[in-house]
Length: 439
Image (cartoon, rainbow, N blue to C red; front, side, top):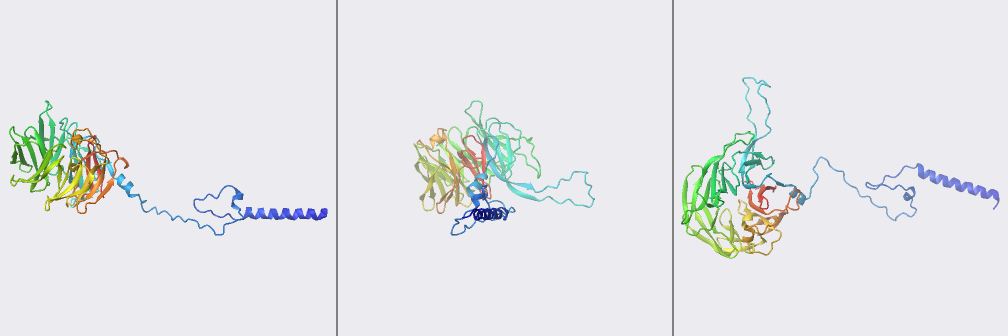
């Protein structure tokens, strides 16, 4: 090849290379799929050995900001668990309270109203509310269930309350504590002042009342909360008396030389009486009507025997010294084994007699039960389970320890509101009150 032709070849090749690079430089870049940065190396986009099939990009649908983001079911349940009280409580009640909706704030004299004008009554709603007794001082607090805003209700101080109950839809309180000798049990019944609609509680209400006989051993509240049944030792027998909050009348309906009894006011007509349980002793359960007649033996001869009757009296939840849980049918006298291990007193019945919510230990160490738990030798770490009394299915609802804002719970004193939208319980570990939204 002549020198002249070689130079021409070099010029042509240079022109071709410049043209190719110019084309690549000035052409419009391809938009990479969403989430792909496209790379920063120019040569990485030039691949002479392309795939046989073009890759189909993944299309991410646009986010609809007008709708809430879907939250996993487990996370939703966890968010609905929250601590209600800011202090240890001795007891609580759930009741329905009227609340004003969107109250118009009209200051007197600021907006003159014509003499002929009429003030429209404010709209109201009925919401589940809570009242509870501070364990250290006996002061009563309250809040609504949907908006936890703890407000002080009373200023009457009664130190070291061991146990507390409420009656008459939260308008009476029963507080139990030890006298100065640390042996004698005092039981105080207080009348709570009524609140007017729209009042903001400032905690200045004084609680006045009277005392029951000394050494009341057990108390149960009637389902309508208008009465209580209490047991006390008169020196010879254990006496059972009904107190009516409405007329303050007392009627004795039971007495027994045996002194170790626990009561549950099952429904308006029936009170159940069970012997205090021990893993080394056989236990028994009886029923008595509100007049003290028809004392009937229902079930017994079971070690570690603990019970929780259903609302209609046809089903009885009971346990033994292995903490196995059973469902007893009073009509057929047959028992069904349920798939969880816990104590009946760590459960609550739904009002339709078909659903049971229980605080169920995740593990149970070796020991004599229920004695070891009653005596504080053992503390459980519970999950919340839902039991179907008809088909005997058990469903895990929540593990409080893994829920946002939760902690290990040893659940006691379980209760629900009328609509069964909320489950309330006290943590036996520290006596704080908790709420689980079931909706």
